[in-house]
Image (cartoon, one colour):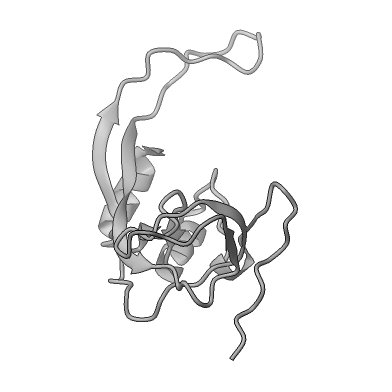
Length: 150
């Protein structure tokens, strides 16, 4: 992910955790949105970062995730996910990172409430925050997985 220098300064100032990298990138070309000549472009500084792989794990019982096969590795919990209709983290597995990739949903980035408030306070843009219980990805229209019976 690319983030602005403003984001990096605010992230560090507030003591948020979970991002790694913070390597500066070189912008080699900028295209104008219109063909009108204006004053010279000033390009802000950008940095490449990536969310850490957290210890937090998706709850294998309470998830509303349809899988083609159960996970074979209890550590990474990776599996073929066919549809997601919300997910929850297993209690006691989250170490408090503000942004991370959870075990069992490594392709998804999860953020804390603290990070959500950080985004709102600083007016950050170009990201969409969706509560995990409302996250839906179902390209084949399979519908949610059935709730566990007790």
